[in-house]
Length: 417
Image 1 (spheres, rainbow, N blue to C red):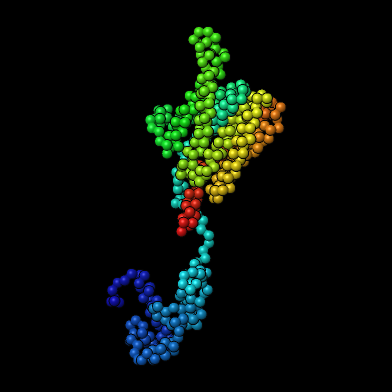
Image 2 (image 1 turned 30 degrees about the horizontal axis):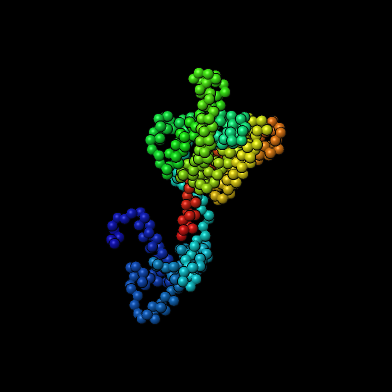
């Protein structure tokens, strides 16, 4: 390279530092010329033995100079050089056993890595559903449980229980249809979903279930008004025909009720929301138990204690299913159970468990007390509200935090590997 050629400032500093290092070496060795084997110096000659002796006299690699020299801290200190790079420092690494003969590579000991995502944004888009879908979950379960209660009162000859169940079922399914259509945005969208029947789509199946259940529950509730109609004329004919028609419609609604109560759990589990999708075995069970408990609450509130026997049995069965499913959801899912135990969802689910236990206890103890039966019925209805809203908000919380999406995926990949 031509020394007179203009060069950059970085190269000039490098060249000046190299010249200073050469001058320092020459001063220590008492030789003003360039070192043998250095750039610009004469190449080393002689036998291999002489070259080895020369290297031994000039020092080890730790005290030598020139390109490619591997210095250590101790050797550089003896030679008066800057340690570069340090070689006698114990490496902060641990040897991992493996490979041939128990030998393996080195795994650096680094701090535990905290999961982060790009700019802290969620991996999944959170559900756009609002509170009206959580209300739809509750009213659908209440309609199903009330129709089953009405069928029990019809088959056992308890008119007060039958009447309360039928009227509540019609009111609840009407509210459920309103919440669903309100979330869809336009009533025509509900009509468009009836143009096809897709068995693999929980939403399509649920639409058809609601379409069958709604008219049957409505006809059964209208039949309760038959005794108020006049005995003669066209309305008199309706008075005679409505009771048997209402009985048949009530049984149709009761047969369809289990599907109405559980399909919403299947619908949530069919989404990509982590804490809903992973709880696919438990959500239908929880929703079935909640539907039974809420229907029992209606019977305990509206019927006299002498006719509330089926409601008490429904309360025990529903509470057992709901508490078992909620316990599984909060303990079986590992990391994905956290959204159901923390924050608002955790508070709602804990309140639901406490109210369910109190409602069942009151139903069993207050067999002859109308006031205690009514209080336990209200507790069961409140428990159903807390459970449905807790499950809803727990799933939304798991979709907003990217940790609940990526970490379980990595764990599944590690298990497969």
